Length: 109
Image (cartoon, rainbow, N blue to C red):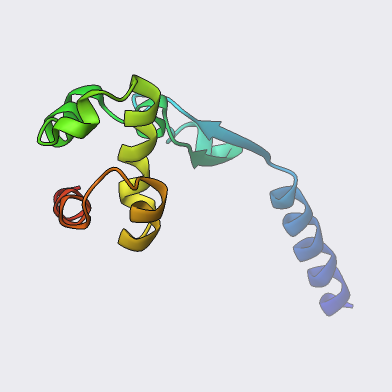
């Protein structure tokens, strides 16, 4: 009898915990300690991590004259590609750049 009663109590507790609402915090300044009592709290990414910082991008890409002619979107895409693509993929996608230039930029990124 005690075993059945304990099993029912544990079942109720696990169901109660499973029904907490999910909360995604985008603002870094929000304190999640109080929210954790009633919600399953997760930290999300912010707009700052989604797009490259223009000043950082300009510092890196200003070393090559071929890139100066590109529009802002192409510069952003190339900057993000430096982090996610291999040197051979970058050379194929950006044939106007020399292999040693791509390697240098990728190493500094």
